Each structure stands twice: as structure tokens, then as C-alpha cells.
Image (cartoon, rainbow, N blue to C red; front, side, top):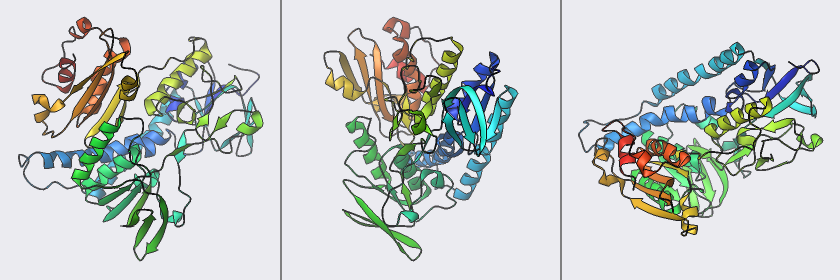
Length: 445
């Protein structure tokens, strides 16, 4: 334990970029504190992925009923009030559970906004706290459009606590949040319009796959407006009108899903000479900022890797190991799987189709129609496709799938991608039959 400073390590932020790695530090005898200005746990458990999947689950169920061709009789609908109450009951558990777990591990909590005074000192609401090392894990917040009528827009945090199903909902944007919200609210009974700035949703995924997903959502009733520049919002009685270069669109609720912005404001980074921009804090291969004793993890970091909860977890654990001297090599990111939680799902991991298509001398792409697999009929799936990417040694190095079970398929194939399993090794995996994991591995070439 440091005698020169109040703590050995202070994490600014108490989300996954902090609490997944911090206990290893206290277990090794380090004194650790979290500085948090909002809810313990950060975005993911409170108003992000956890809340989203709780609301998405009934939406997926209603779609399954519709796809069952009458096998499941009756009209399924979402009781939104009960769905929201259930969501809130579950997410309310997380902050206290995380905090008590961290405190049991010996970690202290300081509540308030932190700003660097120097490389070993921060002020928190006027009080000074010092540490030998810091980890900035402040995450991101929603981008907000600066247009006339912007006060009528809601962000994803608002949306995940919406207490009613609007008759008409306009979503501005075409990323994860936009399409996931569209999928949920269409299933809940809202007439959803998605206004896209360009002509492709979900940049970072293959266009053919994103087009298929957009078509699937459109078939369910979501209206997509492409190549539209949103110009403003006007209130009309109890509703609103969204004006765009392509026309005007009525709404009772408007979600601004135009992106996420790193939380770097008012941290005092400029005064320390820590390098950052609109994409986040610049770090080296050890996740250190331009001040070696100050690290950064999670969504606040400027990086090529997906800004996801598991990425933040991996980084948090790496930083703890680096501080303890257990890992002196630069961070080596594994294959990171990512999923869009719509119905159907879109998931991928490893080498992307874009990279594979651009390097045909290195990779072989195998296209598969997942509906050729009888097991897909069990849960009434109607559509799906998969691309497997192999290197020249015949090892699986990438996958992308569109289906109702895409996330489970990608998770099943992830070990083969990360560890370079050969066909002989894969054949030694005697998985449960029938299951989606069995089907995924059985269909490898």
C-alpha cells in the first residue's frame, strides 16, 4: 500500500472498465478506490445492454409467435407496463450488488465528478484525492443533434425507461441502438420510422447482411428512409413533425440514435497534456495515456476494437495485470464477437467479410443458407444466412450470421476462431444434440 498517496490505484468510473479488473489489485495488496458521479456499474447494467435485452426478450417472443404459422395459437402482445416494471426491478439490483461486491473486495467508493489537478491528484467536488496510478474508465454518452426542436429528442437512456408505447415513433440513426429500438418498439405495436443519413445501416458489418436485416425489419413493419438529412422538429399538439430532406414524418416520440461520444469533458485532460479527440483518449499498446501512470479503458478509449462491454472487461483485467507486473507485453486483443439484438440477430467475429473479400489470396469464403439445417425449424425461423471465412491452412478465422440464433452460433464458433482449431480438433468436440451449438460446429467445412 502506498504511503505517499491516498491510494495506489484510482479508477475514474465504476463500470466494466473498472470493476472487472480492480479486485485483482486489492487481492494483491493494492489500495483501490472508484470515483463515480452517477450509478455504480455504468451504462451497461443500468441503461444499456442489460436493460435492452430485458425489453428485447418479449419482443423476440412475439415475433416467434407470428412466425409459428398458428402452431402457437392466439395473438401475442407485450404488456409494456409490466415489461418496463420487470426491467426496472432487475436493473435496480445491479448498482447495490456491484458496490457491495467491490467493497467486500476492499475497494472504496468516492461519489462525485473527478477532474485532474496533476498526474497524481484529482479534485472531487472540491475535495482532493491522490493516487500513484489512475485508470480513466468514464465511458460514453449519447450524441445529441443540434437542430431546431432538439429539446423534443430523446436519447437511448430515456428510451430504455419509456413508460408507454407511442403510436408513432421516429428513430434518427442506423446503428446498433437505432435498429434494436426499432425492433423492440415495432413488436410492441408502435409504427416505427427509421431515418438514415446514408444508405447503409450498421457500418462495420457487411452491406449484404445489413441490407438483409433491414429488409427483415421492413417486412415486420418498420419504415426505413434512406439518404435523409434531418433538419428540425416541430411540436404539433400532442405530437411532433420531423422535417428531413426527404419529407416530413409524424411522431409521438423521437429517438436520437446518432451515435455515442466519449466522456472526456471536464476531466482536466488538457492541463495534463493527455492526448484525446472526439473518438476518445489516445493510448499506447499498454493502454497508457501520454502520462504513463494514467491508463484508460473501455468506451472512452480511441481504438479500432468494438466498444463493447466484453472489450472493456478484457481491458480492465489487462490493466490490472500490467499494474501488478503480471503482463509486461502490449495488450493482445482476442477475436471480439459482436451482436445486433434485433429479430433476426446479426452477429460476427474474427476476420470480417470486407477484409476477406479484399484479400482473396489469403482467405476463402464459404456461404451457407442456415435454413438448410432442419434444427432451424424448431423455433419457427424463417430466414438466415452465414459466411464462414477460412485461412489458407483451412482454419476458421471469421464468421458472420443473420438469424434468430446468430449470437449463439458465433459464441459456439468463437473458440475455433480464437485458438485456431484444426478440423481434427473440431471433430473431437462432442456437443449436445440437438442444439444450435451442435449445428454450428457440424456445418463447418
